[in-house]
Length: 165
Image 1 (tube, one colour):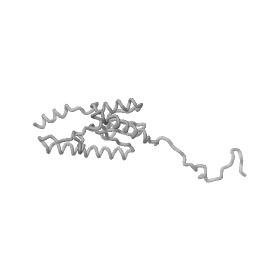
Image 2 (cartoon, rainbow, N blue to C red):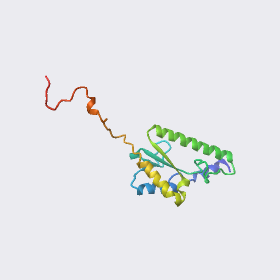
Image 3 (cartoon, one colour):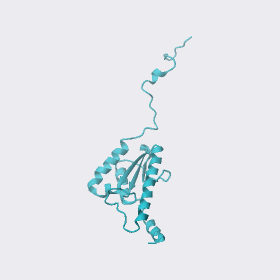
Image 4 (cartoon, rainbow, N blue to C red):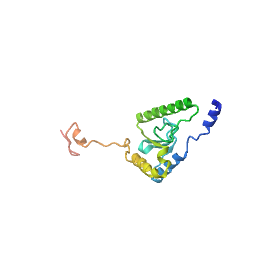
């Protein structure tokens, strides 16, 4: 296969709105979560962005993202060097994007295609995903005063209206 043919074949591969993505999105929506999809302003253009929870979710295909030990991750028998390099670069890019997102204060969750491919595991995995999202709500927009805030004042507290001379 020439590089041009390979390029045309890879261009035909769906990058968003894949079946695993739609399964996860429908589940989260049914549980009341609202999100944005493929936010290009964030590193890696996460599949799902839940701003309220400061959480992003990537739904990764086992082959394309090199899911080690998975039955769906097998290198093709032809052009092995090309595929090994391509998948290694995908893994490195995923790692770098995850680091950038975490440094920016986002929680990063990865869901593997094989985990939700069969209905047997799907329910448990999706429930765990939901709990991981809502169980760790960031409260970065709220301020809670320390418990003994009244005792940190520089002067003793006087009742309102009392004047000291």
